[in-house]
Length: 214
Image (tube, rainbow, N blue to C red; front, side, top):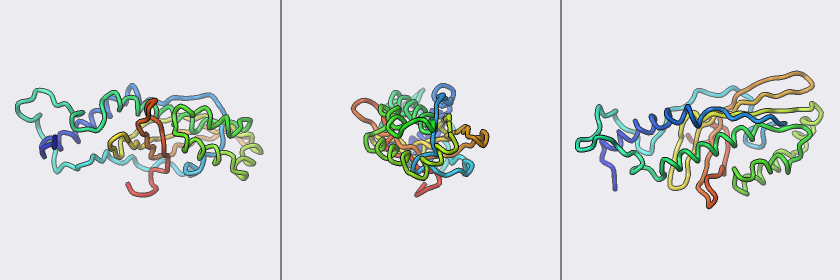
């Protein structure tokens, strides 16, 4: 059913409210004690996280409606979305779990072990990409020389885009890195895309939030 302009405006408001509601339960940071390397491939930037972008719905409303359309006491936002409330919850949970594992590693950990712990969270293609990036000679040598041990955590800032079977979240991924030179912390913002698979939602792409089209 094609939503009216009033429903489209309402959709924007409720998407924001849905994210706010998920914030307490799902968007809390998940922390792993572990070891780690410099972020793989697309996550090698070290600059602070940019300002969190606003939610960008499929159709941007011109204004916010003052009330729910007549004839309805409660709007069901999910009738206009290509996923259910349960899908959104599971996709967010997968994203937060991946964010923590992504920046959790140790200089004693092999590339296979690093990628393997995310096997159920990522697609096979992304797992191979992460493994190869972790094993990059220069990165691996620095990790070993500095005896790097990293612990990661993540929280969802917003939804950037969505479609049938796909949701892209803007995620703040924090890293606490211990080396022979001391301990440092940083937070970097990424765009993390999850797709619906037979076994549930899996991450199939991660890149810096400021890269590409937004």
